[in-house]
Image (cartoon, rainbow, N blue to C red; front, side, top):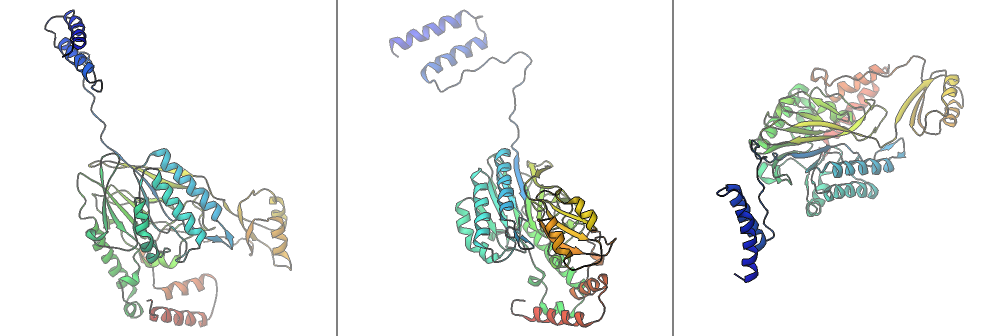
Amino acid sequence: MSRATRKTHAIHLKGWRSETPGSPHSTIRYVMLSLQHVNSSLPILKRTPPGATLATPHPPIVKILHTADWHVGRTLRGHSRADEHSAVLDEIVQIAQDQAVDLVLVAGDQFDRAVPSPESERIVYDALLRLARTGAQVVVIAGNHDNPRRLTAVRPLLKLADITAASSVAAPGKGGVVRLATRSGETACIALFPFQSKRGIVKAEALMTGDPDDHQKEYADRCRAIAGALCAGFAADTVNLVVAHLTVVGAMAGGGERTAHIFDYYVPADIFPVEAHYVALGHIHRPQRIPGRCPIRYAGSPFALDFGETHGEHSVTLIEAEAGKPAHVEQIPLKSGRALTTIRGGSLQLEQLAGTTGDDFLRVYVEEAPTPGLAERVRDMFPHAVDVIVAPPGKTATKRKAIDPGELRDPRAQFQRYLRERGIEGDELSKLFAELLEEEYASPSA
């Protein structure tokens, strides 16, 4: 030991001796001060006040952002929504950044069509990459509007950016379940359930000849078995999550969905186990909670995609979860996207509304007898009108209700009901529809 070091220790020793001899706190103070001189990186212990308790670290919490049904590429009567999609995805990325989320779950239908335009691909992949750059791990699955093969093709590139993509249902050991270590120290066990069409379960011949109720039972039973296999690894020391693109019984349709896929493919909520902290759903455009044995929720579309979507506020869902405890779930509203507004009235009433609707996209019901040039005059009054419908006075839209399995029928029955509701008589259209349906089921892609 050098002379300078001994001198410094003597100074510390002198200070230590001035305290109460034999005091354990004074001994700790001397030892720590001496070590601090040798290695400045070591902390100095502080005396704990009498009666105080040592603080325990807060248990790790996983923060999760749930979004779905972007439908990038969707147009409205030929009007592009690309600027709105870019704006709302900017908003979602900012929420992920501000909330410092660990995981982002994108529950399908990123695109609106199976062959998206280059512009749509740019918007979607740029948003996914920016979400990953927030520090979150991103998990994305295919919906019924997405092309599974295209998602499979880009999956290796997405993986380089820490984005996990699932294009089809797979066994737990072959990509159907992923385990991710989060920044908070927790492990998330995530079951991936991309859209599963009935054609992948029920044979085309059975669809044409069998009982629709039997078809539905076979589909629901198979989905229950898939969910059971994917969730079998849920444990008490992990945060257990499901990401699925499905119709669950009891959901309220949003209005902008593809009707055939909503009414033909559905499962009961009890296929999801009680061990799940949260089930992140896509497919239905109305944000809503589904009663079940665990928290089950549709995130909904990020803004109104069609005039049928009259449920109001759009949002993303923020979940906070930790192993062994119930998750906390809240909605964060989204503000981007133009409103879709329906107005109705005769020419005089509509003239009074001209100039009051801002930049809303409009659907206009003209409640008077049709006359030459009537629709053109209405469009002159409302430049943002994308639908002008001349309708009898007092005609109102059909009220939507919850999806009830007892009311679901095969496509032919659905089409017959459609004709009855619109007062279309005769059986020629029904026969033509049946012929087209047979051709569709008999096609190689079926």
